[in-house]
Length: 265
Image (tube, rainbow, N blue to C red; front, side):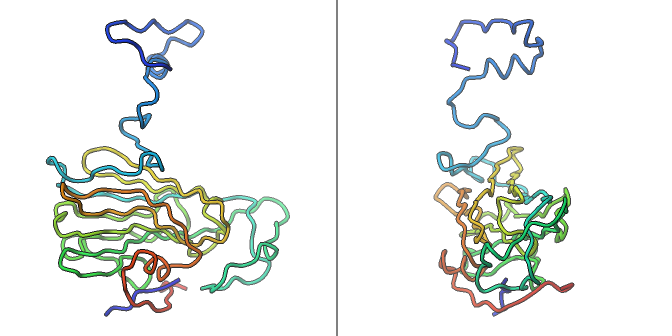
């Protein structure tokens, strides 16, 4: 872990859809699901799942730039999870070998701590990171206009949240939202992590972190970039074996990093 050192088929138009059959229960919801055209991209007009085939959506432009973008990371606490055979390293330099993980006897709940963070580059060239390590919580109404919510150490339903001030959209050049496993999980796929993006328009864009490579410790979730028409959210879902410094090198941020830990560790 690293701390930034300051410095159904479509129906033809005009042909009414038949009433739902009695055996289907005749509910309005069933009728809606059965009669919805397929193959039109996202299945839900409010809940958009960003994927390889649909990786980008605009965040600002056409009068949609005002307000706050909420970024929310959630995960599930695994049971009967693999656990390390010996005391885990706080900041492992190399991934642990699979043979060092053993199955406990009987069901067990594993404490998992995932962190949500954001690398930022502003229009004036200022660069930095907002993350739980080092107390770099950011600010919503002053540079970098990105603020981290309370750090969730136990995977509660509240998850972890970043707030991005879209009223200051002109101040952003690029933002890299990323997540990393701080402790307690051998892989992202074991905790079923999901990152949701909630712009002020009422839409919800979801990126699922289901990489099955047990050695990946960090994930570049999404990149928010300034384009000619405004800010664009693009799915990345790129996994690395290391932590912040490795993501920095991958995206060319150029920050200096030092080892760090949370204040309660």
